[in-house]
Image (cartoon, rainbow, N blue to C red; front, side, top):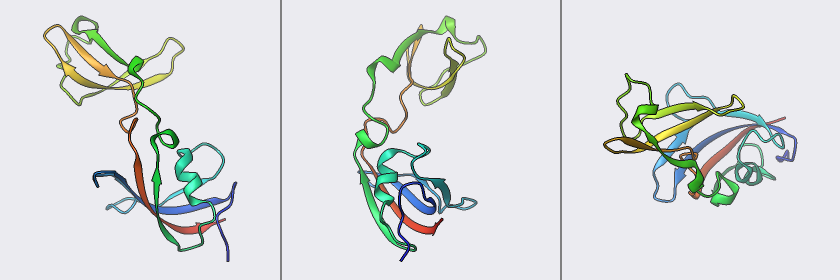
Length: 144
């Protein structure tokens, strides 16, 4: 029987949860599609790819991914306080608001407002799932 190997292109349905059971992403929602990708190209977090290796066509499995194989630890250096005067004048920052900043080399960086103070805001450039163990329920739909 066909099994998932390195460099295969696979199509999978998935539901991603946190250790408390909270669902953060799923291919099963309305208007959603299974994901298709080639293993070994760095398109998906390492723990997800490793968990698919040797799965068979139509097999279902739960993969638990340690933070080191997902989005890593929270990097305190990516949490910074910024004066409100440095933000666009028409912006009213709120906790949870997403911002985009450009690095000196022109790359875009996604940030989230985590605290609003009188004269400043605290922003976090970490991936929202950094520092978390992830649990995925997966089903292999196709192996090429």
